[in-house]
Length: 220
Image 1 (cartoon, rainbow, N blue to C red):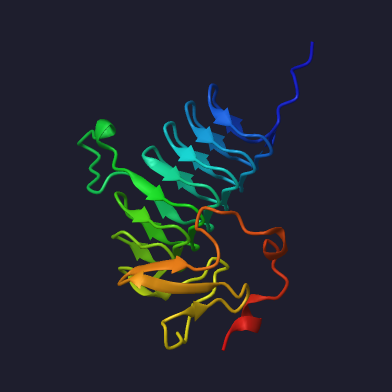
Image 2 (cartoon, rainbow, N blue to C red):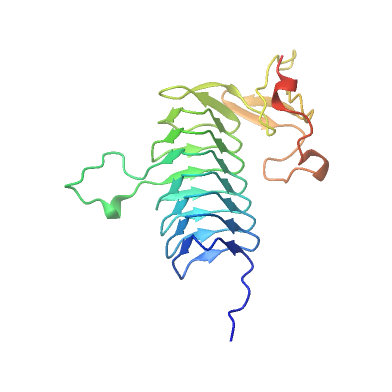
C-alpha cells in the first residue's frame, strides 16, 4: 500500500527526521536537513542545503535561500526572508570544551524582516517587523521595525519600507513615502516608525504583492 500524498514537497536528496511539523505547500529542496521536532509553517521555500534544528520555529511563507542553518532557539515569524549563506547563532561564547546545550540564547526575527546575503545575526537579538539587514552586516543589537542596518557592527542607517525601499525626504510633517507602493510612513515617536496606510500585521493587497519594476528604477 502506497504512502498517502503529503501536502508539502521534499526533494529526494533532503532528509526529514520524524516527527516534525511541516505546513501545506512548503517546498524543501536539495540536501536540506530538517531535524526531529522542528516546526515549519505553510507556503515556505527552503533552498539548497538548509538546516533546521530541533526546536527551531519557522512561520508561514518564509523564504530561506541556500546554505542557511536555523538553529535551536531561533524563531522566524511569517514572511521572513533569509538571504544566501547568512548566519544565525545560538551561543554568544562558544567553547568546544564547555557544554552549553541547555543555555541556547533566543533570536527572534519578526514578521516580514529581511536578512541579506552573508549577514551574521549574533544570538540574543530581535529584528523588528520589516527590518532590513544589509548584505554582510554583523548584527549585535536589536533592530527596530522597518530599521535598515548595515556595516560591521551593524548600525541603523535609516528606514526601509515594507516593499524594501529606503525612505527618504520627509515632508514638513515628517511623513515618508514609499516610491513603489505609495504607502506613507512616520516616526510616531523617536526610533519608532509606523505605516499610516496599512497595519503591520495585515497582508499586502494582491495588486501590491507582485513587483513590476526593478529596484534600480526607483533609485534617485
